[in-house]
Length: 199
Image 1 (tube, rainbow, N blue to C red):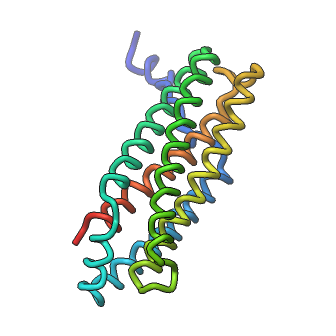
Image 2: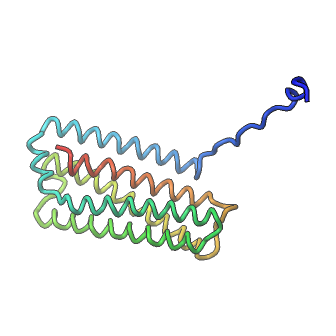
Image 3: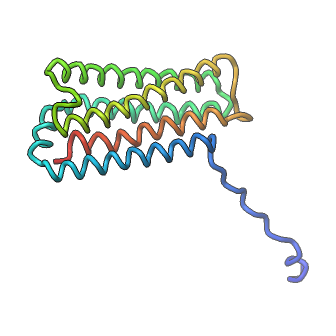
């Protein structure tokens, strides 16, 4: 074949990459990341202004509970990723089982966090105690709310999977729910060291 003949056939274009999940939910995720980013910066600035107060406040937090919740959320994210993969290859039951494990990880997070809040309340600590506790409770409670919303989304996906929904031909809802859960996990990965660890 002559060079001129081969030049008449354009080379195939690689398939265009697409954003997995719902665009509206991705916009919500970006807005939430921005909101948390502002809160993280506020926490960091407040810490610089009141180092001794923040060090004393951090010393009262349970690092073991925070670390356990980190493991639970990371494990939950891994399970959600396995669930999405299972559904993508046509294994709905496998996907549903992985979602159930992710939900259990979320429940574990909720139980540990509620126990931590109960301990602080029993000590008379609330939003008005001092700057550290105000920001600590605002950040962690806001994140806690997101965990609950993400769990409700996973529960809905689990019920739909059990009813025979979704599959290789319909991954939109699964990918959307997974994206939201991974955001919740990512936020905690930043929040835990910032609030509990960094001095």
